Image 1 (cartoon, rainbow, N blue to C red):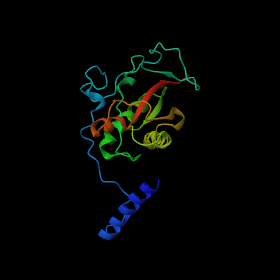
Image 2 (tube, rainbow, N blue to C red):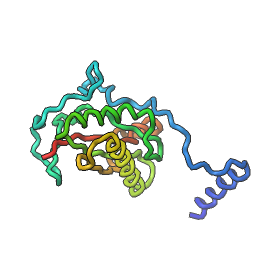
Image 3 (tube, rainbow, N blue to C red):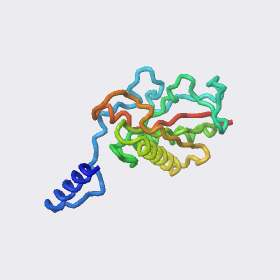
Image 4 (cartoon, helix red, strand yellow):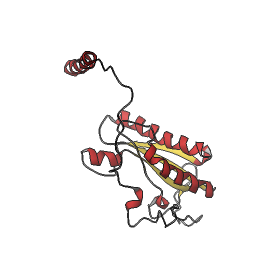
Amino acid sequence: MTKHFLQCAAVAAMFLAVGTGCQSEKPAEDLSAVPSAYDDPNSTALGGNGNVGDWVPGASGLDSADANGWRPADPSGNRLGMPIIYFAYDSDVLVPSETANLDKIANYMMSKPKLALVIEGHCDQRGTDEYNRALGERRANAIRAYLASKGIADNRMNTMSFGKDKPAVEGTGNEVWRQNRRGVPVPMIMP
């Protein structure tokens, strides 16, 4: 513990000596290397017109419902091809490059009033379980707030955090971690 404190103090002294001070904002991270949810050749997400895959009420055939009576809308597990929303390291701020995907989700949800979303928040494998659960929840809530600002009723959305418990990609390193820092919209059928 003392060693960690001394290391932190040394870093802080370095900032003061250089005169830069602490910065509250992290540098912008290039998320261009993160694969798009639409890169999956098996996905039915986008046709030539850029619409999210078609949804037919009651077509899921799944009888398992959550506490709200919501059932998964896509039995294939493809989430109707809805895009995954990626985040920068240690951040719950929506990055501008994800706006187009968020707008696609919002537009699709507006056209399907009986559809609901469970928004899952995920983190990479670094950090404590408690910290990552809280960060995952903030990420899911950031997506929820954006969709609400586009007119999606709050009662059509729920959030849950998995923290680092359900990585999209196993392993370590920047490329793996980028793919695990995400928000996943899971379309549900409301009763």
